[in-house]
Image 1: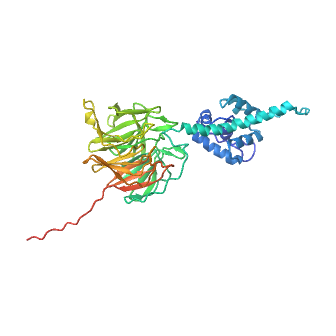
Image 2: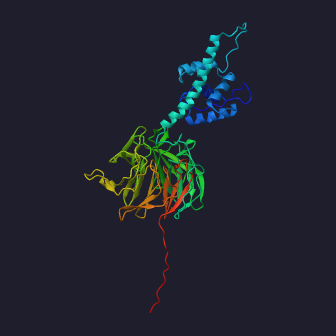
Image 3: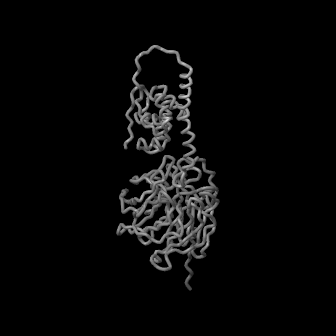
Length: 463
């Protein structure tokens, strides 16, 4: 439903029609979520309206806003009292006319004691009805925080960037962002969707490492967070993701970097977000995630040629926020989070094993520490696990050598918490983009993974 902004013209500088509707519902004691449901708008839009209401009325809280509305005659004390008795669902009181018709003059009567007491109790109930939701909403928001979103989390400034030798800071994102999808095509990086301080976004930003600049691309039709991207034949595939309020989607949308356009493809067999994703031999492989209700261990395989999904062999255990990447004709799945602990498990998936008695999964050496919300990439026979720190702080990243089958520690420019970031490889370098570390990060960090030393070759003198 489109938001209405027609002004209510009863006095200069007053509220818009929509803001007045929000204010009336606020006076009933309704929470932001209840207001959003009543008006068919998002909770973030409610927050924007409340900020505008506070500014226009010159108030600082829900209580002050309600009392100012009563003073101006937009909300009646009787209506607010009725709403307080009925609860936030008392919609008729919230939608009463802004001002009642003036009564006919009557002889003034002295106010009796019981009437004074009644009026005092009524006023106290109005204040309580307005103040209590402030306290209860802050408490319920803290309790309702889920791993699918950082909206509502108390934000703190990230710690100072660590002085590390192989990491170089590059031009940051225009805005801090986490839970995004990142892909590389033809030397350029595409940061797609994710979550910002303003909520879930469909914005696409394109980074050119040569010029060290960001440009904006065509927005993703479905704004999502907790997503990953994979590239097949120059097209960027972004399946599923979270669309808000912890709900997952099954939509598959594909971006063409050349034409800067999006198109829809066959949806997933079931909604899922916060999964691991990798492309191998022209197919997509999606592992685990969150289906909007619980953590899952599912495996889905997508063939772009036929535009069809099929089920694969499940993970040994449910988990989300895991890393996945293809290397040496296998797909490696590392880390993850199941709502309780961060996993240090590492598995190798071989598509050839699908349908055989041996199965496609094999156990590999574990990470040095559990990591949820990490990013994983593979180049030159090595895996690089960057970030994590959901419950346990991190002080290092890790790399895995396929030849030795062991993980070793590598330095990190962000310590403590660095989760839900994007990671891509280009040549000998890795680029870590965005993430969360007490607040939404705009960082772009380049890591020189492989050093190449060029030695001069001199021709020997002929004899």
